Image (tube, rainbow, N blue to C red; front, side, top):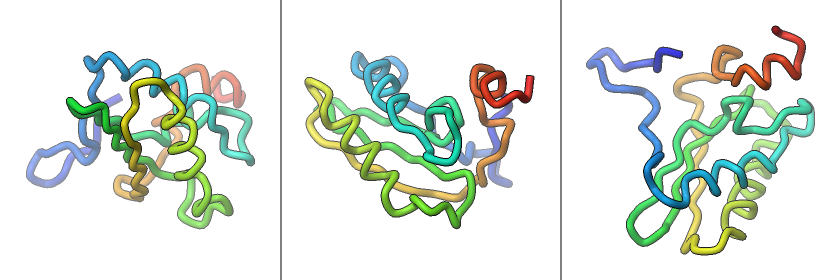
Length: 119
């Protein structure tokens, strides 16, 4: 997938800390959170845009929703924070919501597309 970019060529979605030792655990924790209307976890749905982990093991997650009017918009960031903060070694978790770029079906993993019958 080609990442959306600003007119200046900067990526709209900041890169994740994929080399951090906690990254895979944070991804797995995100995979335990589901959109109640869709039977696929939010990571594979493509709702997690960025997982940034600093040297003190503070985690900042940038996420979106399938639609701004999602009925769980106020609750889902808390679900993500709760799932990630339970991990050993995580110092703190901040979850921010964005709608830029807007979520699209092309952001889903192949597994999610298969689960939802798009493949």
